[in-house]
Image (tube, rainbow, N blue to C red; front, side, top):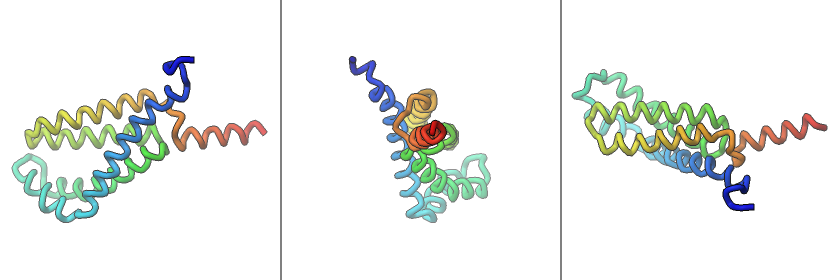
Length: 147
C-alpha cells in the first residue's frame, strides 16, 4: 500500500489543518485574555476610532474575542464539535479580516485569508478526520450499539 492510499495518512491531513488552526486560535485568545484591558483600551479603541464602527461595538467585540478564540482553539485541538467549530472559526476570521480591511491593513488581511482557506479546507475534509474526539465518541457509540 502506498502512502497516498494509507487511510491513516488520509485522515491525518485534516487533523493537521485542524491542529494548526486550533493552536493559532488558542494562543491568540489566551494572549489577548492575559491583558484584556490593554487589548481593548490600548489597541482596539484607538485603532478603530476613525472607522465607522461605534466604540461600544468595538469594545464588546474586543472583550468577547479572546474567549471565542480560546474556546474555538480548544475545540479544534480536541476535535470536538469539529464542523461547528470550523464554521465558527471561519466566521470569526472573516470578522477579523473585515476589521483589518477597515484599518487598510492589507498584509494582515492576506494572512487572515490564508487561515480562512485553511479553515474551509479543514471543513471540507472534516469527514475524513479520524483523529478527533468526535470520531472516537462515534466509534464508541457504534461499538456500544452493536453489542
